[in-house]
Length: 341
Image 1 (cartoon, rainbow, N blue to C red):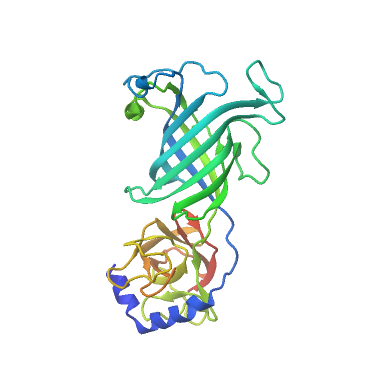
Image 2: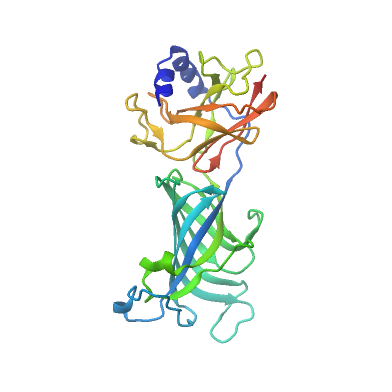
Protein backbone atom coordinates (compact mmCIF):
# COMPACT_ATOMS: atom_id res chain seq x y z
CA UNK A 1 0.00 0.00 0.00
CA UNK A 2 3.01 2.37 -0.02
CA UNK A 3 2.08 3.31 -3.57
CA UNK A 4 -1.32 4.47 -2.34
CA UNK A 5 0.24 6.54 0.41
CA UNK A 6 2.32 8.36 -2.16
CA UNK A 7 -0.57 8.71 -4.62
CA UNK A 8 -3.25 10.18 -2.45
CA UNK A 9 -0.90 12.87 -1.11
CA UNK A 10 -0.34 14.15 -4.62
CA UNK A 11 -2.04 17.49 -5.16
CA UNK A 12 -2.94 16.65 -8.73
CA UNK A 13 -4.65 13.41 -7.68
CA UNK A 14 -6.69 15.28 -5.12
CA UNK A 15 -7.75 17.82 -7.71
CA UNK A 16 -8.64 15.04 -10.16
CA UNK A 17 -10.91 13.33 -7.65
CA UNK A 18 -12.52 16.61 -6.62
CA UNK A 19 -13.48 17.16 -10.25
CA UNK A 20 -14.33 13.59 -11.17
CA UNK A 21 -16.49 12.51 -8.26
CA UNK A 22 -19.20 15.20 -8.68
CA UNK A 23 -19.28 14.72 -12.44
CA UNK A 24 -19.74 11.01 -12.84
CA UNK A 25 -20.42 9.63 -16.27
CA UNK A 26 -20.74 6.19 -17.83
CA UNK A 27 -19.51 5.12 -21.21
CA UNK A 28 -22.19 2.44 -21.19
CA UNK A 29 -24.49 0.67 -18.77
CA UNK A 30 -23.17 -2.58 -17.31
CA UNK A 31 -25.39 -5.62 -17.88
CA UNK A 32 -26.35 -7.87 -14.98
CA UNK A 33 -23.40 -9.90 -13.73
CA UNK A 34 -23.46 -13.66 -14.25
CA UNK A 35 -21.91 -15.64 -11.40
CA UNK A 36 -21.37 -19.33 -12.07
CA UNK A 37 -20.83 -20.86 -8.65
CA UNK A 38 -19.23 -24.31 -8.41
CA UNK A 39 -20.18 -26.34 -5.33
CA UNK A 40 -18.71 -29.62 -4.09
CA UNK A 41 -19.49 -32.05 -1.25
CA UNK A 42 -23.16 -31.19 -1.77
CA UNK A 43 -25.38 -33.25 0.54
CA UNK A 44 -29.15 -33.32 1.03
CA UNK A 45 -30.04 -34.17 4.63
CA UNK A 46 -33.58 -35.57 4.51
CA UNK A 47 -35.80 -35.20 7.56
CA UNK A 48 -36.63 -38.90 7.60
CA UNK A 49 -37.25 -39.36 11.32
CA UNK A 50 -39.26 -37.48 13.87
CA UNK A 51 -36.86 -38.35 16.70
CA UNK A 52 -34.81 -35.16 17.07
CA UNK A 53 -32.44 -36.87 19.51
CA UNK A 54 -31.06 -38.86 16.56
CA UNK A 55 -30.30 -35.84 14.35
CA UNK A 56 -26.63 -35.45 13.29
CA UNK A 57 -25.39 -38.37 15.42
CA UNK A 58 -24.16 -41.12 13.07
CA UNK A 59 -20.61 -40.65 11.67
CA UNK A 60 -20.82 -42.96 8.67
CA UNK A 61 -22.80 -42.61 5.43
CA UNK A 62 -26.51 -43.09 6.21
CA UNK A 63 -28.74 -43.23 3.11
CA UNK A 64 -32.02 -41.38 3.42
CA UNK A 65 -35.27 -43.27 3.85
CA UNK A 66 -37.18 -42.66 0.59
CA UNK A 67 -39.36 -39.68 1.53
CA UNK A 68 -43.02 -38.91 0.88
CA UNK A 69 -44.23 -35.65 -0.60
CA UNK A 70 -44.14 -32.58 1.68
CA UNK A 71 -40.99 -33.76 3.49
CA UNK A 72 -38.35 -31.18 4.52
CA UNK A 73 -34.63 -31.30 3.81
CA UNK A 74 -31.49 -29.25 4.36
CA UNK A 75 -28.71 -29.09 1.73
CA UNK A 76 -25.13 -28.04 2.53
CA UNK A 77 -22.24 -27.67 0.08
CA UNK A 78 -18.82 -26.02 -0.30
CA UNK A 79 -18.33 -23.14 -2.76
CA UNK A 80 -15.02 -23.82 -4.53
CA UNK A 81 -15.04 -21.39 -7.48
CA UNK A 82 -16.87 -18.38 -8.91
CA UNK A 83 -16.64 -17.90 -12.67
CA UNK A 84 -13.72 -20.30 -12.70
CA UNK A 85 -11.76 -18.33 -10.10
CA UNK A 86 -10.91 -20.16 -6.85
CA UNK A 87 -13.15 -19.15 -3.97
CA UNK A 88 -14.48 -20.48 -0.70
CA UNK A 89 -17.81 -20.36 1.05
CA UNK A 90 -20.97 -22.29 1.75
CA UNK A 91 -24.34 -22.79 0.12
CA UNK A 92 -27.09 -23.73 2.56
CA UNK A 93 -30.60 -24.66 1.43
CA UNK A 94 -33.86 -25.27 3.21
CA UNK A 95 -36.28 -27.19 0.97
CA UNK A 96 -39.84 -28.42 1.27
CA UNK A 97 -40.91 -31.01 -1.31
CA UNK A 98 -44.07 -30.16 -3.24
CA UNK A 99 -43.82 -32.36 -6.38
CA UNK A 100 -45.84 -30.12 -8.68
CA UNK A 101 -46.75 -31.78 -11.99
CA UNK A 102 -49.52 -31.66 -14.62
CA UNK A 103 -49.52 -35.50 -14.63
CA UNK A 104 -49.39 -36.56 -10.99
CA UNK A 105 -48.89 -40.01 -9.60
CA UNK A 106 -50.52 -40.74 -6.24
CA UNK A 107 -48.90 -38.45 -3.67
CA UNK A 108 -47.80 -35.80 -6.18
CA UNK A 109 -49.44 -32.38 -6.34
CA UNK A 110 -51.38 -31.63 -9.51
CA UNK A 111 -50.47 -28.26 -11.01
CA UNK A 112 -49.97 -26.47 -14.32
CA UNK A 113 -46.22 -26.26 -13.69
CA UNK A 114 -43.57 -28.83 -12.89
CA UNK A 115 -41.39 -28.13 -9.83
CA UNK A 116 -39.87 -30.25 -7.07
CA UNK A 117 -39.27 -27.99 -4.07
CA UNK A 118 -39.98 -24.67 -2.47
CA UNK A 119 -36.45 -23.48 -1.67
CA UNK A 120 -34.66 -20.89 0.41
CA UNK A 121 -30.95 -20.67 -0.44
CA UNK A 122 -28.09 -18.78 1.16
CA UNK A 123 -24.77 -18.29 -0.65
CA UNK A 124 -21.99 -17.05 1.63
CA UNK A 125 -18.88 -16.11 -0.35
CA UNK A 126 -15.27 -15.97 0.82
CA UNK A 127 -12.11 -15.21 -1.12
CA UNK A 128 -9.67 -18.05 -1.69
CA UNK A 129 -7.73 -16.92 1.40
CA UNK A 130 -10.86 -17.06 3.57
CA UNK A 131 -11.87 -13.37 3.70
CA UNK A 132 -15.64 -12.93 3.96
CA UNK A 133 -16.99 -11.07 0.90
CA UNK A 134 -20.76 -11.18 1.52
CA UNK A 135 -23.86 -13.26 0.93
CA UNK A 136 -26.74 -13.61 -1.50
CA UNK A 137 -30.17 -14.95 -0.53
CA UNK A 138 -32.59 -16.52 -3.00
CA UNK A 139 -35.95 -18.23 -2.75
CA UNK A 140 -38.83 -19.65 -4.79
CA UNK A 141 -39.06 -22.87 -6.81
CA UNK A 142 -36.27 -25.36 -7.43
CA UNK A 143 -35.58 -28.68 -9.01
CA UNK A 144 -36.76 -29.71 -12.44
CA UNK A 145 -38.79 -27.49 -14.72
CA UNK A 146 -38.33 -24.91 -17.42
CA UNK A 147 -36.19 -21.90 -16.43
CA UNK A 148 -37.98 -18.54 -16.64
CA UNK A 149 -37.79 -16.38 -19.77
CA UNK A 150 -34.62 -14.32 -19.97
CA UNK A 151 -32.56 -16.77 -17.90
CA UNK A 152 -28.78 -16.85 -18.40
CA UNK A 153 -27.56 -19.09 -21.23
CA UNK A 154 -27.13 -22.66 -20.08
CA UNK A 155 -29.57 -22.50 -17.18
CA UNK A 156 -31.46 -25.78 -17.15
CA UNK A 157 -33.60 -25.58 -14.02
CA UNK A 158 -34.69 -23.41 -11.13
CA UNK A 159 -36.89 -20.34 -10.91
CA UNK A 160 -35.56 -18.48 -7.88
CA UNK A 161 -35.33 -14.75 -7.22
CA UNK A 162 -32.40 -13.09 -5.47
CA UNK A 163 -34.08 -11.35 -2.55
CA UNK A 164 -31.08 -9.44 -1.25
CA UNK A 165 -27.49 -9.57 -0.18
CA UNK A 166 -24.93 -8.42 2.37
CA UNK A 167 -21.38 -7.10 2.23
CA UNK A 168 -20.25 -6.60 -1.34
CA UNK A 169 -23.72 -7.70 -2.52
CA UNK A 170 -25.76 -5.28 -0.39
CA UNK A 171 -29.09 -4.53 -2.06
CA UNK A 172 -28.54 -6.91 -4.98
CA UNK A 173 -31.43 -8.48 -6.83
CA UNK A 174 -31.77 -10.87 -9.74
CA UNK A 175 -32.38 -14.55 -10.40
CA UNK A 176 -30.82 -17.90 -9.56
CA UNK A 177 -30.93 -21.32 -11.14
CA UNK A 178 -28.70 -24.27 -11.92
CA UNK A 179 -26.59 -25.41 -14.86
CA UNK A 180 -26.07 -29.07 -15.66
CA UNK A 181 -22.49 -29.72 -16.77
CA UNK A 182 -20.65 -32.94 -17.64
CA UNK A 183 -19.17 -32.77 -14.13
CA UNK A 184 -22.56 -32.51 -12.40
CA UNK A 185 -23.27 -35.05 -9.68
CA UNK A 186 -26.60 -34.58 -7.92
CA UNK A 187 -26.61 -33.87 -4.21
CA UNK A 188 -26.17 -37.06 -2.21
CA UNK A 189 -29.37 -37.82 -0.24
CA UNK A 190 -28.50 -38.63 3.36
CA UNK A 191 -30.55 -39.27 6.45
CA UNK A 192 -30.83 -36.35 8.84
CA UNK A 193 -29.28 -38.71 11.40
CA UNK A 194 -25.93 -38.55 9.53
CA UNK A 195 -23.34 -36.33 11.21
CA UNK A 196 -22.69 -33.29 8.95
CA UNK A 197 -19.27 -32.85 10.57
CA UNK A 198 -18.25 -35.78 8.36
CA UNK A 199 -19.73 -34.28 5.17
CA UNK A 200 -16.40 -33.71 3.41
CA UNK A 201 -15.15 -37.14 4.41
CA UNK A 202 -18.37 -38.91 3.38
CA UNK A 203 -18.57 -36.89 0.17
CA UNK A 204 -21.43 -35.52 -1.84
CA UNK A 205 -22.48 -34.09 -5.17
CA UNK A 206 -20.90 -31.55 -7.51
CA UNK A 207 -23.19 -28.89 -8.96
CA UNK A 208 -23.03 -25.46 -10.60
CA UNK A 209 -25.44 -22.70 -9.69
CA UNK A 210 -25.91 -19.65 -11.89
CA UNK A 211 -26.85 -16.28 -10.44
CA UNK A 212 -27.82 -13.28 -12.55
CA UNK A 213 -26.94 -10.44 -10.19
CA UNK A 214 -28.16 -6.86 -10.58
CA UNK A 215 -26.04 -4.93 -8.07
CA UNK A 216 -27.38 -1.88 -6.28
CA UNK A 217 -24.12 -0.02 -6.93
CA UNK A 218 -22.03 -1.65 -9.67
CA UNK A 219 -18.30 -1.00 -10.05
CA UNK A 220 -17.90 2.09 -12.21
CA UNK A 221 -14.82 3.87 -13.50
CA UNK A 222 -15.48 7.55 -12.97
CA UNK A 223 -15.43 10.05 -15.80
CA UNK A 224 -15.32 13.82 -16.09
CA UNK A 225 -15.11 16.31 -18.91
CA UNK A 226 -11.66 15.03 -19.82
CA UNK A 227 -12.76 11.42 -20.20
CA UNK A 228 -12.36 8.34 -17.99
CA UNK A 229 -10.56 8.92 -14.69
CA UNK A 230 -7.59 6.74 -15.64
CA UNK A 231 -4.24 8.40 -14.97
CA UNK A 232 -0.55 7.88 -15.37
CA UNK A 233 0.86 6.92 -11.97
CA UNK A 234 3.79 9.25 -12.54
CA UNK A 235 2.27 12.70 -12.15
CA UNK A 236 -1.40 11.66 -12.28
CA UNK A 237 -2.15 13.28 -15.62
CA UNK A 238 -5.11 11.77 -17.45
CA UNK A 239 -4.50 9.12 -20.07
CA UNK A 240 -5.54 10.87 -23.29
CA UNK A 241 -4.89 10.70 -27.02
CA UNK A 242 -2.13 13.27 -26.61
CA UNK A 243 -0.68 11.41 -23.62
CA UNK A 244 -1.47 7.71 -24.12
CA UNK A 245 -0.60 4.84 -21.81
CA UNK A 246 2.29 2.53 -22.58
CA UNK A 247 2.43 -1.25 -22.39
CA UNK A 248 3.80 -2.33 -19.03
CA UNK A 249 3.07 1.08 -17.48
CA UNK A 250 1.54 1.48 -14.02
CA UNK A 251 -1.77 3.36 -14.15
CA UNK A 252 -4.35 4.45 -11.60
CA UNK A 253 -8.09 4.44 -12.09
CA UNK A 254 -10.69 6.07 -9.89
CA UNK A 255 -13.96 4.24 -9.37
CA UNK A 256 -17.11 3.89 -7.31
CA UNK A 257 -19.04 0.80 -6.26
CA UNK A 258 -16.16 -1.41 -5.09
CA UNK A 259 -17.91 -2.18 -1.82
CA UNK A 260 -16.76 -2.56 1.79
CA UNK A 261 -13.21 -1.98 2.96
CA UNK A 262 -10.87 -3.05 5.75
CA UNK A 263 -10.98 -1.20 8.03
CA UNK A 264 -14.64 -0.49 7.39
CA UNK A 265 -16.34 2.88 7.49
CA UNK A 266 -19.85 3.75 8.60
CA UNK A 267 -22.36 4.19 5.76
CA UNK A 268 -22.08 7.62 4.18
CA UNK A 269 -18.78 8.43 5.90
CA UNK A 270 -15.55 9.27 4.04
CA UNK A 271 -12.62 6.90 3.85
CA UNK A 272 -9.75 7.59 6.28
CA UNK A 273 -6.22 8.56 5.32
CA UNK A 274 -4.61 6.40 7.98
CA UNK A 275 -4.84 3.52 7.87
CA UNK A 276 -5.83 3.27 4.25
CA UNK A 277 -9.09 1.36 3.72
CA UNK A 278 -8.29 -1.62 1.48
CA UNK A 279 -11.13 -3.02 -0.64
CA UNK A 280 -12.40 -6.17 1.07
CA UNK A 281 -13.55 -8.01 -2.09
CA UNK A 282 -11.38 -9.47 -4.83
CA UNK A 283 -10.69 -6.69 -7.37
CA UNK A 284 -9.75 -7.37 -10.97
CA UNK A 285 -8.86 -5.02 -13.84
CA UNK A 286 -8.95 -6.20 -17.42
CA UNK A 287 -7.41 -4.52 -20.47
CA UNK A 288 -9.00 -5.68 -23.72
CA UNK A 289 -10.54 -8.51 -21.73
CA UNK A 290 -7.21 -9.79 -20.38
CA UNK A 291 -6.38 -9.60 -16.65
CA UNK A 292 -4.00 -6.83 -15.63
CA UNK A 293 -1.90 -7.02 -12.48
CA UNK A 294 -3.70 -5.16 -9.69
CA UNK A 295 -1.15 -3.42 -7.47
CA UNK A 296 -3.63 -2.18 -4.87
CA UNK A 297 -7.23 -1.06 -4.35
CA UNK A 298 -8.39 1.19 -1.53
CA UNK A 299 -10.90 3.86 -0.61
CA UNK A 300 -9.65 7.31 -1.58
CA UNK A 301 -9.08 9.32 1.64
CA UNK A 302 -11.85 11.85 2.18
CA UNK A 303 -14.08 10.37 -0.53
CA UNK A 304 -17.44 8.66 0.00
CA UNK A 305 -17.77 5.63 -2.31
CA UNK A 306 -14.66 6.69 -4.20
CA UNK A 307 -11.74 4.32 -4.72
CA UNK A 308 -8.30 4.28 -6.28
CA UNK A 309 -7.08 1.14 -8.06
CA UNK A 310 -3.48 0.87 -9.25
CA UNK A 311 -2.76 -1.59 -12.04
CA UNK A 312 -0.15 -2.45 -14.63
CA UNK A 313 -0.96 -2.50 -18.33
CA UNK A 314 -0.10 -5.94 -19.73
CA UNK A 315 3.12 -5.90 -21.70
CA UNK A 316 1.40 -7.64 -24.61
CA UNK A 317 -1.53 -5.21 -24.79
CA UNK A 318 -2.34 -4.21 -28.35
CA UNK A 319 -1.63 -0.62 -29.29
CA UNK A 320 -4.55 1.63 -30.11
CA UNK A 321 -7.80 2.16 -28.23
CA UNK A 322 -8.18 -0.36 -25.41
CA UNK A 323 -11.10 -1.26 -23.20
CA UNK A 324 -10.59 -1.17 -19.44
CA UNK A 325 -12.97 -2.73 -16.91
CA UNK A 326 -12.83 -3.01 -13.14
CA UNK A 327 -14.65 -5.67 -11.16
CA UNK A 328 -15.21 -6.29 -7.45
CA UNK A 329 -16.67 -9.45 -5.91
CA UNK A 330 -16.67 -11.01 -9.42
CA UNK A 331 -19.03 -8.27 -10.70
CA UNK A 332 -17.66 -6.22 -13.60
CA UNK A 333 -18.64 -2.65 -14.37
CA UNK A 334 -19.01 -0.96 -17.74
CA UNK A 335 -15.93 -0.66 -19.91
CA UNK A 336 -14.16 2.59 -20.74
CA UNK A 337 -11.70 3.26 -23.55
CA UNK A 338 -8.15 4.54 -23.22
CA UNK A 339 -5.39 4.89 -25.83
CA UNK A 340 -2.26 2.70 -25.61
CA UNK A 341 0.83 3.60 -27.59
